[in-house]
Length: 174
Image 1 (spheres, one colour):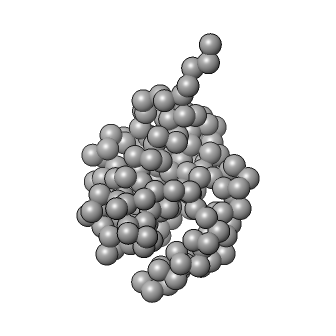
Image 2: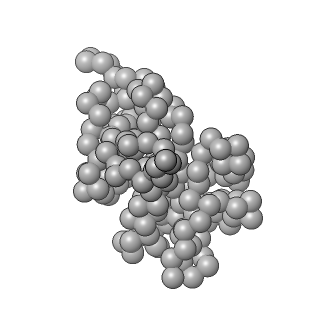
């Protein structure tokens, strides 16, 4: 059974270890920072487990590092990962559903950035299928908008940003 819950301090080491096994650079300090930001109300970290085993996570930042989202107060879904062994089982969909539910409590729009290398191909398709559309501002590299004629390095810093209009789930007080 899939469970989705907020990051707990006890999750930090197992998550970092799972990514270290894959050879990915996601050290415990990253998740400690995420946990502290979650405690401060700056970020939400949703962790997924399957039968009690860590499967993936997604985070939401309320103040995006992408200037247009920050200026328009669009929360951003960032750092979304499902371990390869757990992919294609609906876990990513459940994580994004829950992330969007959290965002809809505060905002009518969700933002997300996606890398442009083949490693991000599945994510690119998933976001479009979920109704995300490019924000129309073009490519960014290293959080800077690319201009015609710019030379950039094609790496994880090259991204395109998308938005999605959400169904509001805010409680109306009256």
